[in-house]
Amino acid sequence: MSSRKETVLDLAKFIDKGVQVKLTGGRQVTGTLKGYDQLLNLVLDEATEFLRDPDDPLKTTDQTRHLGLIICRGTAVMLVSPTDGTDEIANPFVQPDGA
Image (cartoon, rainbow, N blue to C red; front, side, top):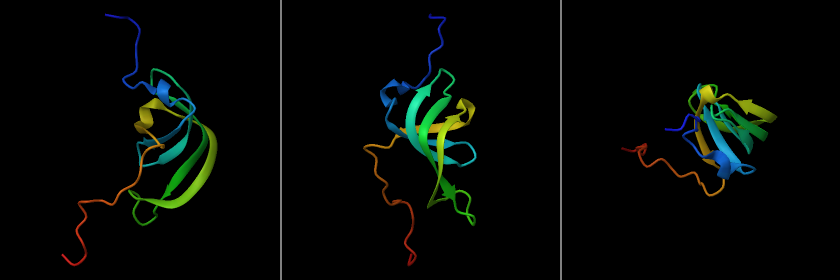
């Protein structure tokens, strides 16, 4: 067994590519991944935060806020996904209003 700690995620393939990061507390940020460490601390450049709906804090709106260069603490990172090759689809579980 190796004494060197390795991260569960292999983020090397996402360096200098766009990623979307969801953080604990509901914040959602996109940016260019510039670096990371074994604790999953992330460095994002040209970061943009999607603002939440004031009426429903669990939903994000189309409004954004430019953050620039940021560090996301690994303890707050819940999800890291690439922005290229992903599309948003309609929720198949939402019932139509007439039902």
